[in-house]
Image 1: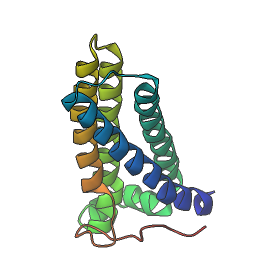
Image 2: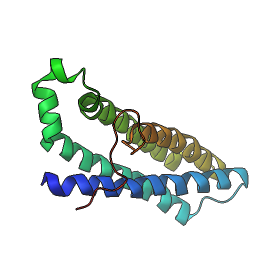
Image 3: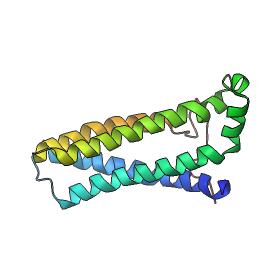
Length: 154
């Protein structure tokens, strides 16, 4: 199961990142040009949050079956001082959860806003904050915390 979930989680992050970027660009454009918040805009808002939730479920599944996390939790006093174990055991997990909660709050707030401009503004701000949190905790190949490939093969 781990051998399938890890590459799926690695691949699916691109759906999350691309959908967040598209949502943010469309939201800023709609906000600044006083565009009407239409069905397409609402669908993109919804699917972006849905992709983030699917990624969260993949990540949580990995957290509970990962040998890296199992070792981290079993030998916590020792592994808390090792960057890679601490990153995946605490930092990555917590920051991603926070990022997805921010996206979820933004989606829910935008859905309830009365005007088109407020919907776009809410998405633009909340999704941008969520994206920054997520980007800061992705284990990029160039990351100073811990490095992983852009895409893990199946």
